[in-house]
Amino acid sequence: MRFLISVFSNQFFRISLRAALLPAVILTAGCSVTRIYPEVPPSPDALSEINSFHVNQVEGEQSALFEKILIHELDQFPQLNYLAIFPEVSKTNAAVLSAEVRRYSTNDEEKTLTQTHISLVEHKVLQENPSGLNFFRRTFEFEEKTYSERLIQRTSDLEIAFKVTNIAGDKTLYFKVENASIEQSYRGDENILLIPDSGDATIHLAQLLIRKFLDRINPEQNEHVVELEKGTNPVPFTFGLLDFGHPRIIRSNHFATGNRYDLALKGWNYVLFEPRTYPKSERFIFTDEVYIRLKKSGLPQTTLRPLLEIHGKSFDHNEINIVLSGLIPNQDFERYAEIIKSHSKFSQNINRLNYAAAHYNLGVVFQLRNELELAAYHFSQANAYNPQEKYSQAWTDLQHLKGEYNPLASMMDHSVESYGKLPPPEGALLQPKTN
Image (cartoon, rainbow, N blue to C red; front, top):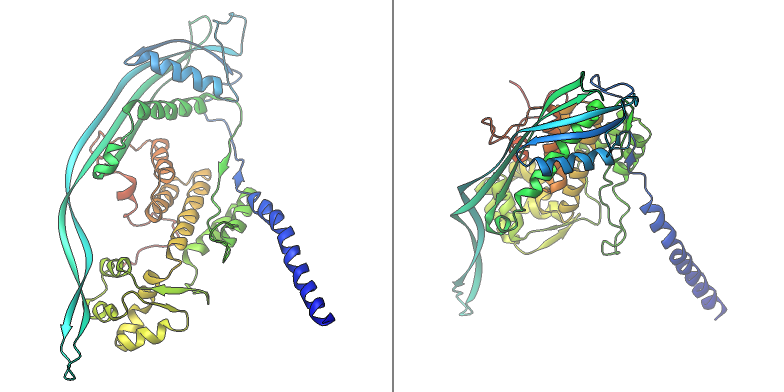
């Protein structure tokens, strides 16, 4: 009896200890380092020793709106000061800012796309049995239907000329015309109903352009905060409530926050290209969605059809190879087994989230290093793995920084989706084969 009590006490102590440590672990996980504080040196166009500006006049279309945005952005800029009252001539660190809106337009173009919907249809066929006990056998076939999908492409274009003069007004200190354009696509009736007001797009575009201008004239070193992503790695049996992030992404984030960018880039790339291994807890589930993905991936019909025998079933790490080798020929097993397992594994969605996070972090650091082509590539890949506004907006903002994004100049297909399908740029770790 004492022995049982002793064992029970030990178990109770262990459980209590783990329960006591759990909040601390959660807090520690929540405090993981994911922020970079890069310092950007002044641009060659910076106005030395001038850090205070009075907005004198904004002319052109929607001038009242753009004047409010300009004053707001100037007032929020940490290294610059907004002067509400016209300064005295003796104030040597002040200048007068004026702007002219030379071009502003918003255009919605509607198109109709022909799409193909693939579904897996189940049939039950009555099978006769010599014993007289007939039964139903399940058969499957892929059904492809074409349908029309609405697409609205919204393009907004903005051009503002900025002019900075001295207080007396007899000397121009700075003059430059800034351009910004943005293209956004909305597919399907559901998304089209949720199209934001065009005024919101105008405000974002103006903020982007004005911040770009203020960065140019800022005479001081600029520090801003860049937030990295930590990926996902839910702790088993916690129903996703406990997630410390992907271990290798977290470690690479630590390198990045310490300005050890080369090590960070290697770590994130390893997440993308590491050998695909399956944990013992992995399961492979064959649902309708899995078969449709396999068909879209180009799996031959002669290989795909035998797999329908295991529709609706799941297998563990030890069973899957035995099952696949019994269904498809040896040469097909060697060629397609990894593709089949990759599409049917239960953790596929988690992997896609981690690939998106790794690509996004790569894009952030390449942008900090001014390698903009590589940054754009990785932002587009992040959006391809996990489409969301954060990734597409990062890509779009980068196009403005590059000065190459103008949807009104025959670049209607220059979108984050189309860019993600292009070959990797020079310098990317993965390159297409050349004959």
